Image 1 (cartoon, rainbow, N blue to C red):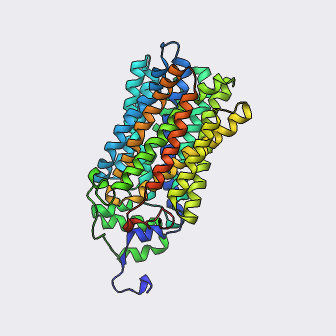
Image 2 (image 1 turned 60 degrees about the horizontal axis):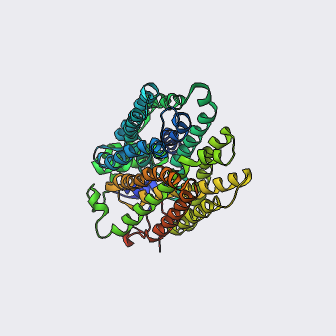
Image 3 (image 1 turned 180 degrees about the horizontal axis):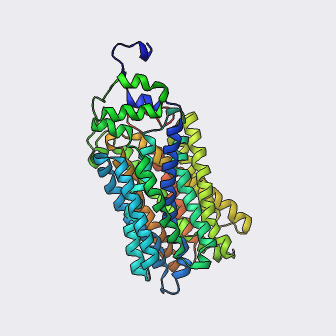
Length: 454
């Protein structure tokens, strides 16, 4: 029966969102999340371009150079772990805005005050608290809006595109601006996130699924009418259905018997994936300089990783939307990334460096983007932000260790071969963990996951 013919019409929110065509408001909110994650990606990767300028003046060992990257990730770990509970209780909107305020303020303070290794790292830890909000919560937010037919593609354009573009922008600024005004220019540019704050304060709505969980039916109807204006008259008179049961917003719910295997597999994959991503991203400029590449080309490899990563994430997400079996595609992407890293052990030359680096970004970082969507779709609304936040918090342990262990291995083995070997093995481990991340039977056909998982 058509909704208009029903005597007591009611709205099932998830179905309304999943079946919606991509409209004007979808595109605006996707662009807002892309803008948020652009500054996240930019700020996450720009310390790799600071190393070249401060390593000698600050008399840094390789381990300390690795800590320049890892310090921000320490803050990210705590921000990602703690923000989920805040967002699940107080809302996605206010938590996203808080994260953006943090990275804006501390980016500017880094440009102004960071005159030593200790001060730089302390400011990066504080900045990381905001970074730990933006990427996981943007992923949660966009997945709660994503239409089923294009769930992964929509989410990737709304989050991964911005993050990859930000990482690329860090490379461009590193190549062209830092030789002119110094490494501090990276953080003056990062402070431009201040321009985004008033726009989001004015226009960013709350997540519809959080509004439902809070019991604000009027706000749900209003937002649905903006997302699907052709059904606005019906929404005005419809009641809002509620789920019969939802998990409490607690990290313990992620480890309940029905979710434990899924959660532990996701955490393992994220840890190993981000170990690989940040180990490679932090050291690839220095690695390419050692291979005889020019300064500009060496810094450009970091940008190449990010450009290729978005293409990889989009391709993987499209295949999942079309054919399902997300776990298999994720595993394949990480195995391709592993093969590319192993190839760096044997191949040399400018063309080989370009091709191998592109494949590494396509496979390793591209798969991580899709893992974030996989995680968001795997959990119910009440613990979704907590689930994504914990996935990336555990992953950031790997991200912290990647640059640091990369420096340690290079110092003790006098070259990058052992570091590259460890990254390649970690990618294989991520692939195996993805294959083990089987959803509970009652959640196997959630929107955003492609077809039902076998």
